[in-house]
Length: 224
Image 1 (cartoon, one colour):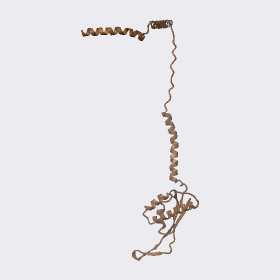
Image 2: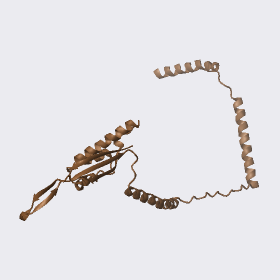
Image 3: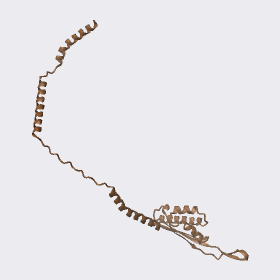
Image 4: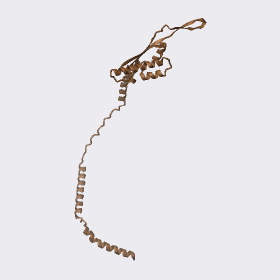
């Protein structure tokens, strides 16, 4: 969406107005209005009014075409100042030694165009992006080489050689004797376990009165 606003026959020199309008070319609308607000030039106020008129025209055209736009997304696509008519208003200004200088009243025309389309990148931005891409392309091989250097070579694990067990006749005889002794000891323990009689509660109760009698005798001896 694009819209244009014009101010014609503005009192003032076009050269002085161009000093102000050059500051807002290619800038966002809100940023341009801020610049004009704090610019100490007579042409800043009428240029700001022209810019606000261009924003209003863009909003109106968008409503007519049933298009939704955000005024903050607008930017100054084009702005220029043309020379206006002099209207034959010549004046004379007194000068030294009786001379006279001719004065002319200057007028100018201001034109501002705003747009909501994507703002093209400037030459400076394009050069910066190209330099960044070039640095990235040059840095990629260096990074790969550095990564290869930092990677330590993997050491292969050496397997220990298998040791063959050599059995001698003496070792075999000793192992046989040990095995026979273990088996004999196991049989003896089993036989002892079979001979042991388990004590039941009845057997324990039979021995309890004798123990009590012995305990009483011990107590009497201690009293004496």
